[in-house]
Length: 230
Image (cartoon, rainbow, N blue to C red; front, side):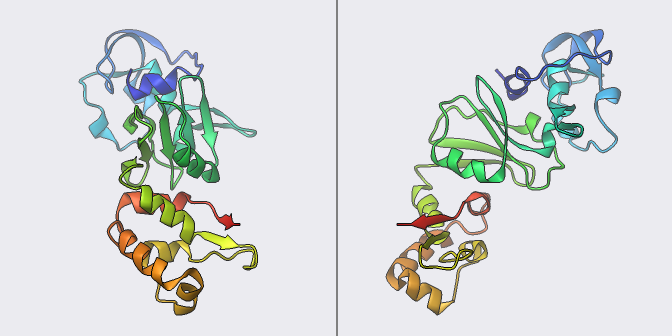
């Protein structure tokens, strides 16, 4: 199953925009007898034309579910592009940012799709990849495309990111050993380093330095939640 079908099966939609046709979906190439005309389905702000890989004037109903304003909020309908979300065989769940870290640490059983939006403006659904291995989590983002979190390769990095963005009970409420900027760029704050432990810092900073400026570390640092050490 492709990612569009995997997501769309959780979304109900019926509209007079759906018309009879005898063609293929411009996104997936699947044969369709009902669809939505591209000029109706795609807004004037749509720019991801490279994903329209098949010659057709129509997209499938499933593709339109992934693109259109289908998610009900208190005030209006929004598109999935406005959200981070998790899709499993049984549900589509809109996520708050602080929920993604826990999913990375304890992912659901595959298959699933995980998406994170930095801007809440760009489509991610039709660009997503289905995770089939819990140790290689595929996270589709609107800024860095698909980011693979290889939990075996990145195990030390994940642990260090959490450790640096932790605190002890006697630290000020908003404080962590290091800031997210320091995780991404390093730190020369000797007082912080001494509190954390100079030897641990030197070893861990060398590990992080190998991954700095990569989408993996940028995303992990963005998503990590503060943890209080006991």
